[in-house]
Length: 444
Ligand SMILES: NC(=O)c1ccc[n+]([C@@H]2O[C@H](COP(=O)([O-])OP(=O)(O)OC[C@H]3O[C@@H](n4cnc5c(N)ncnc54)[C@H](O)[C@@H]3O)[C@@H](O)[C@H]2O)c1
Picture 1 (cartoon, rainbow, N blue to C red):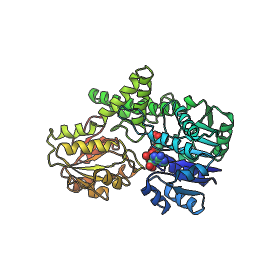
Picture 2 (picture 1 turned 45 degrees about the vertical axis):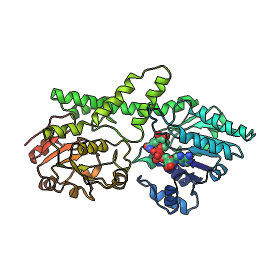
Picture 3 (picture 1 turned 180 degrees about the horizontal axis):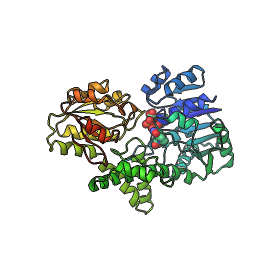
Picture 4 (picture 1 turned 90 degrees about the vertical axis):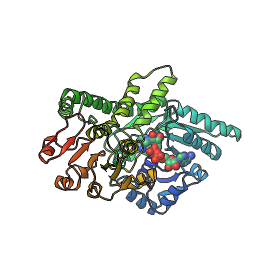
């Protein structure tokens, strides 16, 4: 089948690569010439495990192409996927300018029936707005061409995006036209071989499903972070509590890790956007508001522990930071907890020596050259001469480090762990002062 995808970011590229991988003819359209140049040279502009290889193989097979030309995009695919960004507006609601720009471009160039598939995360009612936008442009052109608009929210996780797309838990399709459901079902058949994963529903429910999923996951995290702060005050160990509650199948072990707060391009903006949607419809979403408020506070947690340890005197101290990406297996730094920590340390006159296996370039792009940031090329070099180590992203390579090397390289053996990677009893025996989340600090 012929597929066009607008937006060559995390969602658009993964969707394009996976649809091409199963044999479709995919054309990806973006407005960023730098990205399109890179992609046409066979380079991926983002890091996502397995993506580069898949892009190169499908480009070589002629099934995956990239262009800046929306006219070529509209001419190409029966399916017109919109996978552009929907960043937060000033009040937290989703900014739909990119989605509506694509809708206008489709309206301008449409010359045959097309199915417009909204994959971006968009507020309830956006399919109607896209339809109205296309219709308005068509009317100006004096055209009565037919088209359909479908909601097909994406649930992939950065870091495991290819696997999630190839073996989805579910494929939500919101339509008001049974024929488009069948055409999309055919497109998704290769991903459905093990069992039927398509959940067909009305458009508004599909749009809300995406926000509901992300908001519930964010709620689980904020709940555990709230509990970790209570546990600290009560002398309880949140890790024991986590295991204690996770054993209940109604609760489950997934997504109940306490930590330094959630980041990324989805949870923070989607929780805020849903809260704004509720408000615009005369409902105050108290719980959603609290989820974000708890997360905002949690992102300061590690800094507060660091500051308390040094009695607020951080000027000219140097901190080694392990992990910059908002989570492991990605280079995405959007709303990453590391940014809050680094920026607050800098505000207090401290310096940072940071290491991340993938997010180094992105960090350099965001912060540029500055005297108080050294981007290191190994975890060992980050700790050289630092006053203490802070762990902020739980990359696997940080799980079992050589503590002798850490002790030998730090000015004093102090670790601030924002992801509870280490066993306090073990670390205290190794001679470390160790702070973690929701557990009492230990000192040798
Ligand atoms: N990143 C995730 O893990 C994830 C998961 C599920 C859903 N989503 C949602 O998917 C959407 C895309 O997210 P992302 O992380 O891939 O974004 P991204 O910022 O990585 O990529 C968006 C791309 O769209 C391009 N673009 C903007 N306007 C365009 C236009 N008019 N025509 C063509 N391209 C245009 C940008 O240049 C950019 O390359 C968002 O709504 C997001 O909430 C993201």
